[in-house]
Image (cartoon, rainbow, N blue to C red; front, side, top):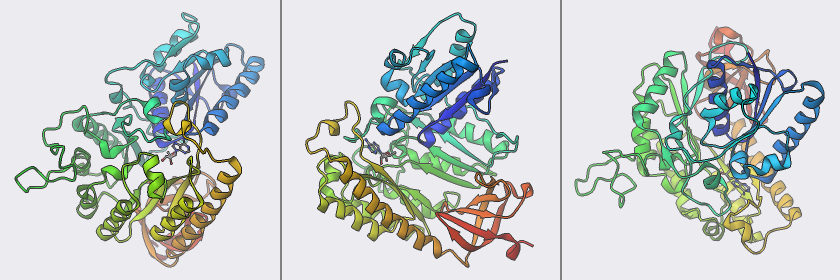
Length: 468
Ligand code: 5AD
């Protein structure tokens, strides 16, 4: 049977899409190759969020084709995901050896198209059209990794697309309109994962706080003037569809932990904050992208909240779960960002003290409103601000991680560390990575470890002290 190598760029949603494609191909008899050098088919699952990510994938494909033509004639090449969606046929015009361009609503067609290409029934396939119901097609999982060991954690895709239209962001164009799967469909997938040994599930979507608000009828959805969860007239709290989904997943016996990403501060209602206080499986960590600390920039970005509102959500989350781990995404160098605006971002980071923040240098994206805004900042200035913010974020992170030294934490052991196979890796509820000397026998266990020291955004633990 043919073998396929899939390389993924970008976010967890992309990781999940690649996993689903791999699982679908394996079900059809394909094998998974460890590298492009030994594969019959090479698929690059791409990211369009920044130009850099697109260039990396284009360069990779150029290199793969260059080598493949010499070493593996007949090898099939495909782009899938966000860049495939946004560039379509243009990718084949640029790289004529590419056989397949598969858009973000077409992942489930991969096997059918590859069969056609391998059998030479078709020569080139570009499919980036919309497909109704495609949000319900990312379902299959590969529950054992390369080592054929059981997976402890899993991602579950709950929705596709985004209607927020932040002015910098290409996602509404690459992923389309918001479309949500139904609660029973998602719960069934989660139940099956748990039955196969999964202990932690991360619910995924481009804007999970909008889950179920658009095209899926939910009888108990709050009436639109009360998005924060108050039923009209009755004074009875009605939770948003996303919180209803978390509640439904929470009921699954054997599931230990629930996480989700990414929410949008605009839709972060009190019902979601309250869920952290009352649902023990919803672990104490939140990734909440702020993008900027300046109200002026937030408005230009079309984010739909102010700095004060963001800080209020953080305060409420910390009141609900004092130990909550908080991370964020921040864009540096948005068009027109002044030194004063940037300092607002620095001060917000000092005020919130994120455990970590992912920093993005602003990148002009095709057809987004921000790309046409005046006062695009020079690269050197973006670099300089990025370096300053990174220093601050790292300093705060280091300080926060150091507070864990000497403490006992409960980790869910996921498997060997990716960097050092001799060590095992687990995560705290607040999403800190903990490395310790252990073995396969620890996989899937919830265990207490004592933190002995820190590394860069890593904790080192010693289970021997508490788990003899
Ligand atoms: N330039 C830089 N960063 C971006 N992001 C999204 N669009 C852009 C862009 N044009 C970042 C945001 C988002 C993360 C996934 O990517 O911070 O939260």
